[in-house]
Length: 246
Image 1 (tube, rainbow, N blue to C red):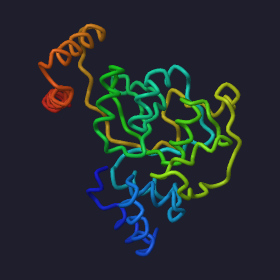
Image 2 (cartoon, helix red, strand yellow):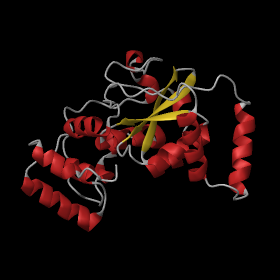
Image 3 (cartoon, rainbow, N blue to C red):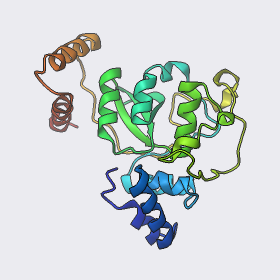
Image 4 (cartoon, helix red, strand yellow):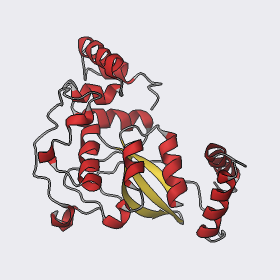
């Protein structure tokens, strides 16, 4: 996000928090670090749903409520635990869009392009960021990658420092192991109804070399320091913009 739009000021202007609450949260952020939205939620000043709705509108990205939904094991396997924890991201589901396979990636900081680039590079898929609340994301990472449940107090480290107060994020529900969750809660092949719409992806090329060859070539170029990952992603985006009909 980069806080370029000054999220705190937007929330105050919309009456979602007070000036006093913003100053208190900024004090906590200055002391302990972290992002202002997560800090406001952790301090109990802002409902998580309001944070997600605000970010989806401002960033023009889709958002989703993870409660009652299960992620398939094969989708989780696309993103290793160390990457998911490092970038605080969660693979949600894959879907074919305009001839391309797209991975929808849940994030509480969807403006983090390094996370999107890293996941796209590792999976060979186009990646679309989806806004997820910080509490829900923390609980999902704990459940799917560390095997913890709500009883393990996995929300405790949402805030930037140990022991910080964490807001009550709505009615609690028992967290079940993945294989015991209701089958109707699984993400379908199509985007869930509560996934907000987002702009179309660049049109996929009609033909391309095998993915394994491209991945091996790109890895070799980066390992030999011929090109950086950032330069590669910028070049790909430039080609997409110049492609006919894009």
